Image (spheres, rainbow, N blue to C red):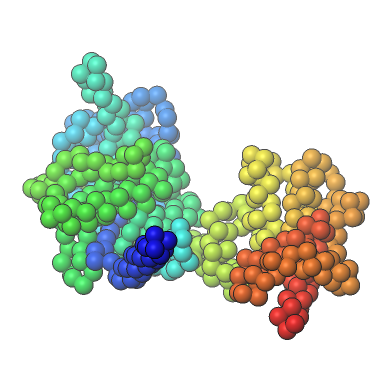
Length: 527
């Protein structure tokens, strides 16, 4: 009697666990009640030797206040002179992002009072920017999902000057000012709020950085402040068009930080709404150590920047046709300077070399490995893109990372990479052997991949009779796993194949071994 009560209790506990698991599964299948709405504002430092309106140097880490012209310090009587190279770089970027270019844009004064803003205003292009209505298409690679295409609309791209830097001496209760950055040329890119989460925002920034580097218009060194991201974040109910209060996360200085900051802020606002708490309209900062956002100042009252036209700068006029005058910036001339952009390169890799999206994404994200991929493919009559990708992005990259070797000290020559490609493509060696050969070449880069394989007898065993004999032995020795396979457990089939591979010291042709093992399992099924 006691035993039946105990077994009944166990059954009830099991049924309860199953019902709870089913409930959680159903909840996970239902659409989320809330979703994030994210818009980015990105400040990119233009790669020029001098500032936007003065001839001061833009060199990073110069001694304090060394790169400061009289205009940068707002000395009375000094006037701005626009840097043509800055205009050309901003125009090139705008064209690459498919913007509508304004043939005549204007400058404004944006008034606010900080210690590192000597003039008491910033020269920007708030009301009539250089370019509008662009679009950026990019792949999003979620941590646990398939890559997908996303696009974000670019509201406007404008030229503006940077501020200086305030250094806070807490003990001395002083604010020290370094004006080396004051007046450095920035492109501000304002995107529409059409992103949903941190991964999409981080992918947008990564794609934009690839374009900047390709165009050579920004170094994208976030650690030097050359690329800074502000994120405007709010949430809304899934079936609603009403946005909740918006917070702004200022000066995020890493791509991973962009994803973490935005995801945290979205979840913080969702949790506040669920508790019926008020979300305050405020500026927040990202705390990288705790992966959270913290309040800086509230924005309940909209700040009046008292925008006014910049009286010392005429409209910035661009020529729509080509012109021989070097003093004039021509839209058509700059348009011809646009190189092949990341989006086109990915399409080309997938179309011409049959790569899947994630492979094309990984290659385009690394210029050195992309050039190496093209170099190998150009020396192969009919290259198998996926095999070339495997040799470079899996085998070579694993060697470099495991041994802490930089790209410029890569010990594997192009010739040896080609030999490994042919050996792998012709199914003469396994991936395990490729790794062993690369380790040997790392020890002696002057050696030959082909020679190493021959000397060590590392060729794949592909004799069907020999493989059949070993597979039969494995089936006889592992009847328990065979029965598990017959019951539909796929992992057990993998264990059988691994056992065969181990008997051949990782040198069996896995394709043949798998085929034979499937035949033997089928025979077992029909017994």
